[in-house]
Amino acid sequence: DGGITQSPKYLFRKEGQNVTLSCEQNLNHDAMYWYRQDPGQGLRLIYYSQIVNDFQKGDIAEGYSVSREKKESFPLTVTSAQKNPTAFYLCASRNERDRGSKNIQYFGAGTRLSVL
Amino acid sequence: DQQVKQNSPSLSVQEGRISILNCDYTNSMFDYFLWYKKYPAEGPTFLISISSIKDKNEDGRFTVFLNKSAKHLSLHIVPSQPGDSAVYFCAAGTPGGYQKVTFGTGTKLQVIP
Image 1: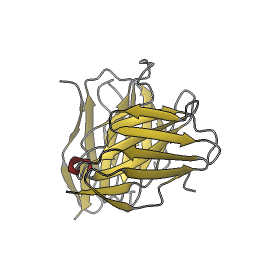
Image 2 (image 1 turned 60 degrees about the vertical axis):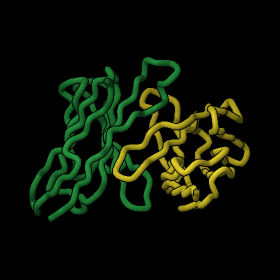
Image 3 (image 1 turned 180 degrees about the horizontal axis):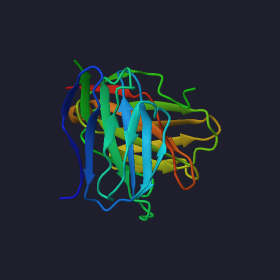
């Protein structure tokens, strides 16, 4: 049963703390993405990765970091430098090799991060 | 600069009637457009897409219309069902290696039984 798994579903961060959100996919997709959603706003791109060991900043990368050591995994770290981290975080992946669906991003269920 | 705009934050429709969700864009380089449906506390799921070379794409109860000259697209749901109640995001993508996708702010559809 292929898909994208995000964990945890809910996460709380203390002041000055770094937290890491997990994203795992077994769809064999090369491209992976992290988005942030705030109330009343669309999805804003934080980071993306097209291939293992390579990733690029999106529109709002400040205060975040990522790694892509394995094709299946694209964890996002919210650092203490991110002053307003409370949001719903979404991970997505895309199959660039499938001509019929190469433009479609498939999303995980999301992680809601709150600040204590 | 909001390149993809959904000017109606919410829409209410009676069950069985047509739902029309609108989306406007400003970037003429957008090559393809997608609609996603999102339930609370879940990730968006892909609904339907359209390439810039087409003006209509249909999939069951869902039809997307593209008017390139007006930089406008719309999603029609006929007939609307209570299970269609969700937030609908319009998204647009540019061609190229990375294929960046820009999302609108969403329209919350409520289908009233």
